[in-house]
Length: 159
Image 1 (cartoon, rainbow, N blue to C red):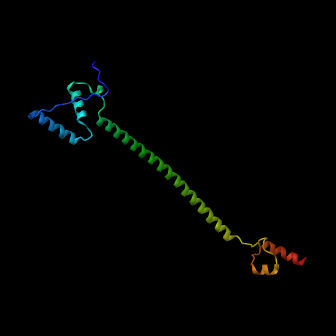
Image 2 (image 1 turned 120 degrees about the vertical axis):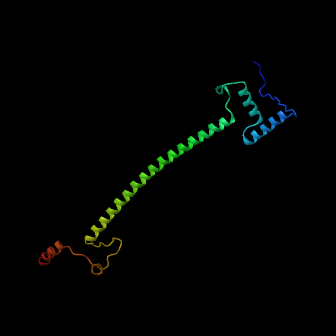
Image 3 (image 1 turned 180 degrees about the vertical axis):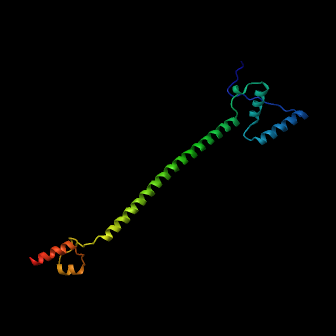
């Protein structure tokens, strides 16, 4: 087999005949339609076809590489879409769980508020306040009286 150097340049000559000029015009039209191809690419493809070399033995063309890249991009986009769907489903589930917990907490706070409204409140002065006059503090703050203490209080008064 004939060995060429790493890069071999061969020239193609188009004569000023009608057939060659017509072929050259066709080549120019073809290359205008497919700007990703060069004249060299076109010549190589034609030689592969003329020599009847099977496609499996041919090197992939630039358009095949572009197609492969486009397929990979499409696959990656599908994977991203799948990931986004799974992610949003997970986050939606978490959000629903948080909302249900918030609702439960709101209900519990409401129940506590109702219980506190039903219970009598008693005021215990903070320790930081100096106790000046216990009578004035007792008069200033109304206190609810427990019925049990009031009954026992009668016995203490008698004692």
